[in-house]
Image 1 (cartoon, rainbow, N blue to C red):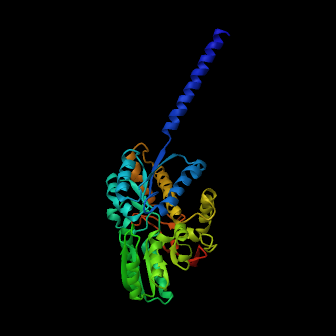
Image 2: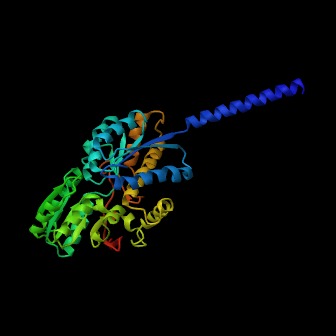
Image 3: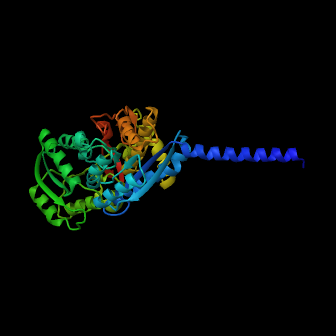
Length: 398
């Protein structure tokens, strides 16, 4: 080997090393969206948290690798065990240690409300998977709070209107005694009054309760035409079973908290005939073919079922999925607006501002039109009514 060729080899080696170093720098400089997903995988709300966790993993492991995004996405997941205090602690960790741009949290209304002050102080966008309108209202005190599920208000508008159509004039409320149940009752009272439906009785219970007989007996004695249950499984099932056990034979309605396979799997024949407020994802293959949501719903359901099993997709997985997709949309908008990606506080605010300009986005929970005045952005197109027949959610009103 000549001296010249040795020099050439040395130059080539230096060039290769230099290119490798430049490649590493380029990878390090690639924009990165950091999402922290805090879900109730265990605890009282685990029936809802499990499909939400599945959706986040589907997004992370199946969708992201094929998405070809112009930025990197890192997702960290935590289980808050359905405990609002733990939710607050994990949100702080996500903000301070993980330096998250967006926090997807929480599964429940109590946890979502508990983290509002922490979110506001850090000026970090939070996208909740819980239903209460109080999570995003009033906007003046919740400027960084968004949510993906339809609101109790919208669902109860449809539910009580349907009750009236069925000739129901007197009802009883049977719900959780926490902030989720309180929101349901708060939205039911004016809606019932507006429709001329009388609220005869109000009974409450805690998530950990197992004996619902005393409340069920009082409801039966009030002789309502129908009972509305505002709870999640297994509480929703226990309340339903108690009513039937004490001899109540009228129709039993449930809020969207029961629109999950666990409600049917736990209740089996006992919940046959129950009328349940659901999202489009529960009945995606039954809604009109002309509905603009049908195509994105079918696409998501096929993806979810391909990983977790045929017929497993439900409303709560969709709420997490929409939260993840809106995170992508918000970050892309912040980048397009020219925000300096190295400036974390500025990016966090820019993501919030970008989300407020979301128009006609076809999610799996409905058509999102977000603004500075509306951090839910859904309308009545996000609500449906179903009846449990042969263990399935069967559409009865679109």
